Length: 283
Image (cartoon, rainbow, N blue to C red; front, side, top):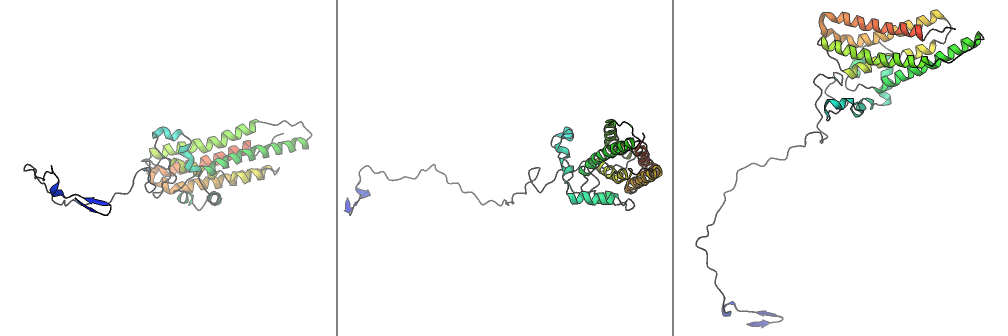
């Protein structure tokens, strides 16, 4: 044993009981050769969680227009077909900028361009149509009430507020902009020329915008002038719808002319109904 400083060193050769290591004759050394497997980088994340992946478009293009691959206007289909009956399914169609709505309103005032469906194909909205119909109901009720009130007071007759004017206007505008596009959607799909359902709602909703200034001008107490205003508004609205659907409906073949004519006449019929029930004041 040797001592140096604060440390003590023991000579291993003088320690009794030490056992030299003996190799195990049954021990076998196994060596692995290097693998030639290639290491691939991890693939990019896919699926609904990844921001770079989009959900597939509907096969029948029910909830969008014939867009160019954009899925911003597509409702998520995670809950199956029942998801289409939820508010969240239609939230993307109300996510629209004010500038977009203003541009589409301006487009509806120039019906002969026929470029509305092309410009709204990637992102049709329901925000504009909803507020157009709501504004029409308010304008029709308020102007109709004001005109009848003035007419009764002018003739010194008793005046009573007609609540049916509001309910009737709501039924006409909301019903027309909902049922007519639905019927047209079914007809176009039957003739193998399907169009996006929301695209049709958007088109018909903006086609009613011209009736807002027409209703405001109906306060002029001249019957022939009211007929002219209703006729011009109806013609512009009908032309707007027909020309924007013409290029798409042409794929329906020989029936395309009949479908376009029906769309045009139906829109004119709406103008006549509005003239008879909203543009006319009786005392």
